[in-house]
Amino acid sequence: MHFKKGYRALDVGITRAHALIDQLSVQEPIELLCEAFEIPRSCYYDHCQRRRSPDDERVRLLSRVNELFGQRRSAAGSRSIVSILQEDGEQIGRFKVRGLMRELGLISKQPGSHAYKKATVERPDIPNILNREFDVAAPNQVWCGDITYIWAQGKWHYLAVVMDL
Image (cartoon, rainbow, N blue to C red; front, side, top):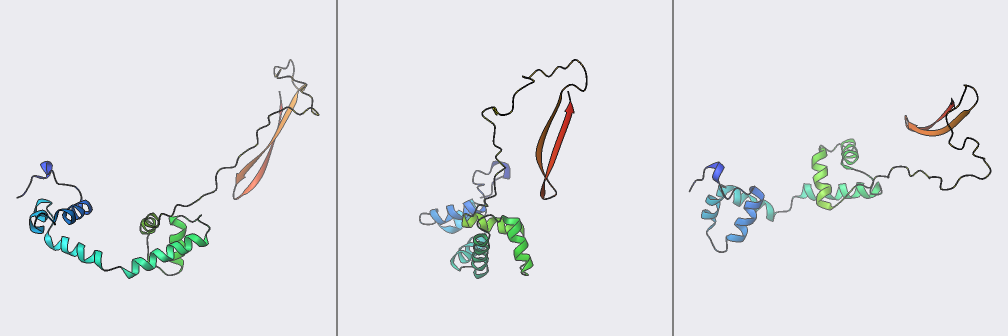
């Protein structure tokens, strides 16, 4: 029983196929189910064998990733955990660590953006002389300025601007 690839109704992916074969094997023979899902029986039995024996290396990596995540107060992402593991001599990639983190339900908590305070009232000690009249008849009559902070090169820089309106 072979289906054309374009018309194959049981093309559900290998993981889902294994799960369906597990469920349906109570009612139907495994040989028939493997043929229907176009999975070699040896692959299915290999999957069953791997599932029974716990992977010591994976358990060790899960424990190490969880430990590093906790040490970094839940702020470490997959990239930083990979760099720490590689510094310790571990041969591992970012996507493997990302999968381990997903399996453990670990989500990196990154600090949010800076919340700037918005002025709600005018300052009574500083009079509003311009009263939003920015059209001036001649130069050098009205000057205005402002100061802001800019995060660059890992530190705060101050920017002061003075303009002749």
